[in-house]
Length: 137
Image (spheres, rainbow, N blue to C red):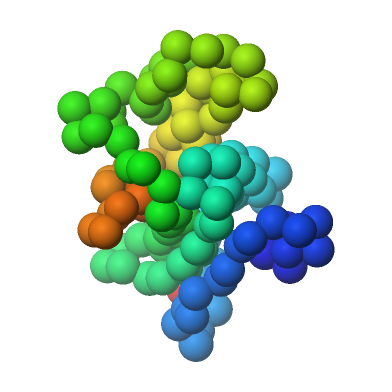
């Protein structure tokens, strides 16, 4: 995914990950959709996307971070609802229809996982998808 995005000219970086293989219980198409939506947002609002994969307790965690303006704390929960946006415009030039984060949340939860947004220290957002690992891994 990261290689393909770089080949299209996107500013995407994969941060160092654990040396072990991380296997999550997720539909590959749904997983790619989550990555694409979150990477698109990171690039749109923060010019670059930093991806991190890690094992945390009983979860496989994917974080996509940017250095954009962030989101007011009071709005973090609202922007994951369908058609919710921080700006009023609905045009593609203004950022889309407000479905991207709602899709990510629905896909993560549909796979028994979770989705959360947090403001990043120093500016930006961290989008975090937590997924169940494959049994025995």
